[in-house]
Length: 67
Figure 1 (cartoon, rainbow, N blue to C red):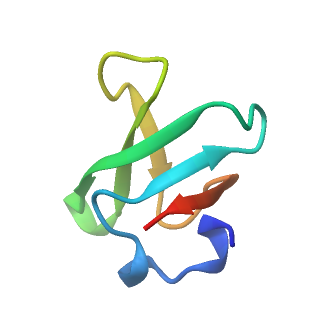
Figure 2: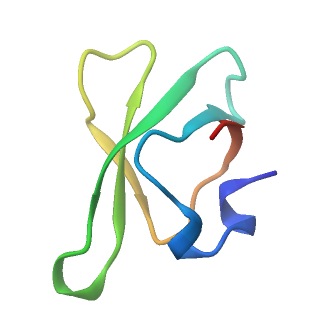
């Protein structure tokens, strides 16, 4: 299942996702901001030392690896 198939309320901190560009890279949702009514999920990828980016709402080209 892909992130964009979930509703926003189903996206949680701790979910593990896999990049569709490189399936060997796994990310973890580490924080969800909801500033100004715009949900933003921060992802820390397995090849990074901290979260540098993420996605708005459920707009992510990723698949769920582990809940």
